[in-house]
Length: 293
Ligand SMILES: O=c1ccn([C@@H]2O[C@H](COP(=O)(O)O)[C@@H](O)[C@H]2O)c(=O)[nH]1
Image 1 (cartoon, protein in one colour):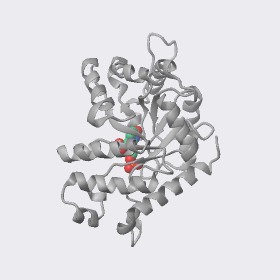
Image 2: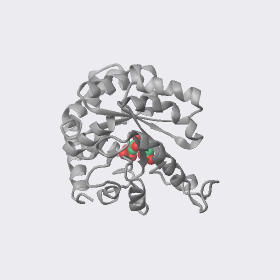
Image 3: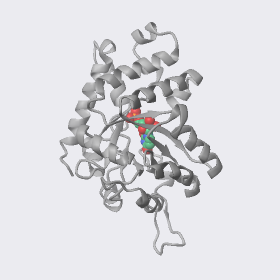
């Protein structure tokens, strides 16, 4: 199962997920001068970072908005980057955060689990209901695909809706909305547990809030987490480590913190890929120094 592959990669390489959110503004001038087309610029920028980091990175996440923003050529860069990563045997997450009625979700599943934009995991937004998730299950059933569903996100606005205390007809006591989502996903995920003990139905939990971390980790023991919010959004090693279990059970994403790390150095532009690697190593050390919780 894909989750077993991710688990093994994390055992070997650590928990850092590099976010290739490759805004043109983040790309050094020498690359923009060398290549004319935006697809080539984005791809070459990504490729150099991937080549420099793939021995220490278990998974790359591409936020599709950064490619859609550049139209067809942006999507060509998205396709070429995911193909390049997958051809190197490394896992990809398409951060697409889709959520729609079942008939549309079927087409989203086809679009991102087959064909040009095929990745290993995608992110989904469950707030239209669980019938918006079920069309993806037939791919998970086959074993080589997985999903990360938004549970409790990293942004300050997460509190506006996800933290609302509500009760359902099945519960006697009220609980936060994100626990309603988590409990249901946990139940759905129990069918897809790999030999590593985790399910191919994982959840996105923001690494910027630490108060609930131990409760979330303890409540969803078989759930693998995608943990964004490290670095630019303020999450630290001590925060994100709380969502891990014995050093595994989650990957921690950093996008700007890694791909724009070079901007702090005088010789950064020419060596942006080296500084991306240094940033991955520093992040890995920051997380691992917390010990295998
Ligand atoms: O709760 C969430 C879910 C997804 N994201 C995504 O992660 C990265 C974070 O980028 P940074 O530059 O490391 O802040 C980005 O792609 C978001 O769309 C998130 O931040 N929080």
